[in-house]
Length: 479
Image (cartoon, rainbow, N blue to C red; front, side):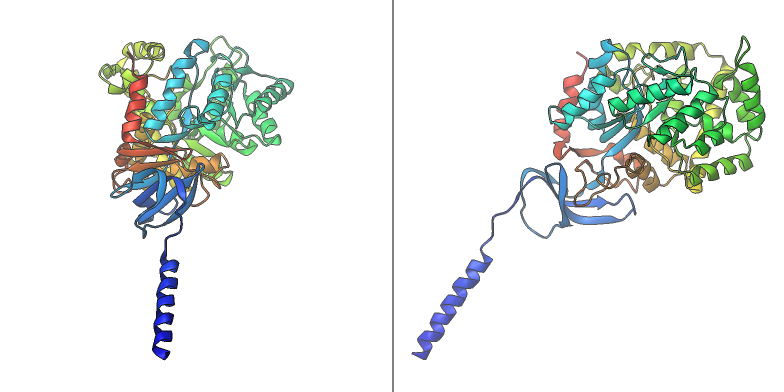
């Protein structure tokens, strides 16, 4: 009798244990990337053999890949791969008027195919279309990068770029800012073709009162220090930083101001040789400290400078990416190419000297604590600066300039997110973050050029393997 009770107890124990081991229903994720090495772009740490699970556009699981199976609508094999946050291009343009809307839209595919999952539109004349693209992509109607936009640029009367908001008085500036706020732009872009120094500084001041970020070019009639103290959030390109690195900045600024009411007012192009010749390490140190103190970021755009300075010797006729640039946009490249071919040799040589100087400033700014943002300046009229690929080239040039691969990756990921105020939800591989990711076949911290070797892109929580990206590219190829 006692033996039977023991056997019955053992049978019940085995049955209960079997029930306990019975697998529960697996959650079905939208995307699972398994056995992948995660690159932490904040610290440079590599986390091998991880699983990243994604649902509804968000990362919902990040853990050691210790299970054999995960249920997912899309399964991505991460074995031998490296996962980074999607790249950010912090200076692009959508422009050219209504006849170029469709041509500009094709660039959305180019950005995504090259791992760029977010772009910052730095002003143009296609704002309604840009806002509609953003809405459509967020709704899943087609694929492309997330877009932050400034809307139309602010400039002075008779502005060079069509669609600019032309201002001179505080009342006109406030009216322009009212219109931008109605558009719900993400920041204010100021351009320097015609704007006066006073209007420029007032635009910064009045935008800051409204809580709007300001970035842009800068008239040579003001100093960068004045703009930084007024609250300028970022300076685009390095022409204005270089002027602030001149030991004669005040004198050169005074010369520009004195020329403004003459038949031949002086501007950036005329003053650059004098700015270059009066470079001062002490002045550079002073402006870098001021920029760091006021958290004024810089967008070096080294790649476009290199591309344009090399135009006299490279017409880009054999560029493979040219086949994916709409002929209407290629037509906008002609003016710069023609001008470059006619440049005197001395001007060509100066352009290359200027590029070298800009490159030398990059590691100094990084060391001074200035936030660097990777931007390509791609878009119509900017000749042969191809969407997507040019951002990869920019990141590579930042490393060649003296940044570490990690610092360059930060400039192209988390720095952009911090600048736009959204780092709490994106540009990191962690639970709760947006699922905008790039899967690479090799470690970018060992060789930054590995950002070109893309195995898959995840955008808004949907995975696009290399084959799918190739099909998307094929669809926009010129017939």
